Image 1: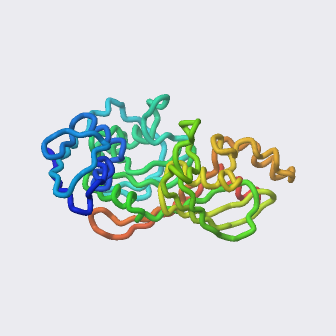
Image 2: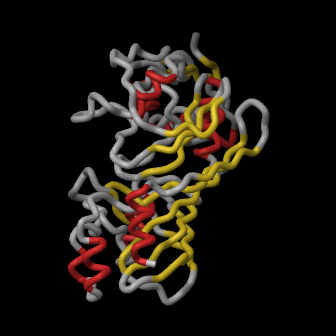
Image 3: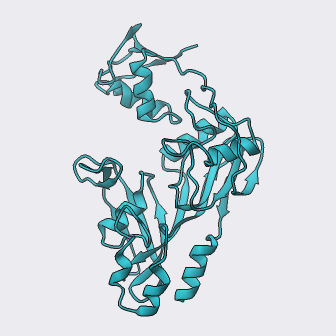
Length: 313
């Protein structure tokens, strides 16, 4: 059954895909565009293009299909559950695990493991990522919240989109900092030539804000705490790389081979064998989608990262 909306005067000249993305927090703009392309969005009874601009009092209908069958087999995948109830599951993801199936990653993903643990997870708009409200990169470890039903999915997605979720990371990066803290405000968008990368894009990028604070300084390295005020793809990695402080071990944004620049031989020997970016989602806070209670979680760094920090200290 299609959902019906009525455009307000303030919505005049807004693109229909932008309008619907704001209205449906659980759907990305690309998913909205797919629904428009499939003819599932109508204005005043007629199908439209994504670029169509709406008028006040337009009657807008959108048909959101039920989730498609995944067609994947549940697998036992290692992750630590910190909290679980009938609506949500909070976990700590180890490094090296991809969140959802994609080209080249058809087995062993977090989604496979979630289906093994709990087969009844949310799925919004036909997406193939049950329960996944947000994600971490493959080699980034730490906290994630998973939705177990559609109510939880939609409310958590709204909180993430509105910037209401508290997210704090720690990272080991190259270089030293003159200041003890600061704010990076630099829009992020798709890299102009390398489509799998993101980059700082002053003209075409989306707003991205990262707050950083020095925890500890070493010889040519710094251990940082980072608070995200927005949630762009690869945000921390891109922002730090743009400051010439890439995350140690980052193979995409300049942190893989930079160990050779470290003058201190002891420090150089510790980090030259690092095989992944040393970035960990340490704290996560959000409002429970059903009870309205604010919940906050903390996660220890994985052993490989913990051992490196201790060896440097």
